[in-house]
Amino acid sequence: MITPSLPISAGNVFVHTTQARGWTPEELAARAADKIIYVGDQSHPAVQAQARAFKENVKQVVAFYLKEAVEQDRATIALRLREAGHPNLVYLLGD
Image 1 (tube, rainbow, N blue to C red):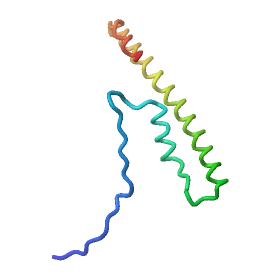
Image 2: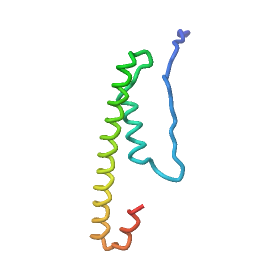
Image 3: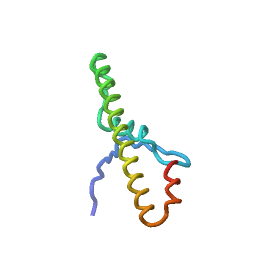
């Protein structure tokens, strides 16, 4: 049986890595903002400027709430470690 071949496009694929650490809230916020807001190269310069300013604002808001999430999660883990009788391990969360 012969089937016609269809062109398949995966789009653009980008690989982002870190070395010896995880992603910071600011790095994740920048990646999120890149996915949320696209600034077209063919757009009017005034529209591009407005979109870039909005994108920066979104990045700042996302970074703020990611930092809050990290702090709250660490507080929860610290509490659980203390409740489990391991208060000496809580200092490890300060990295």
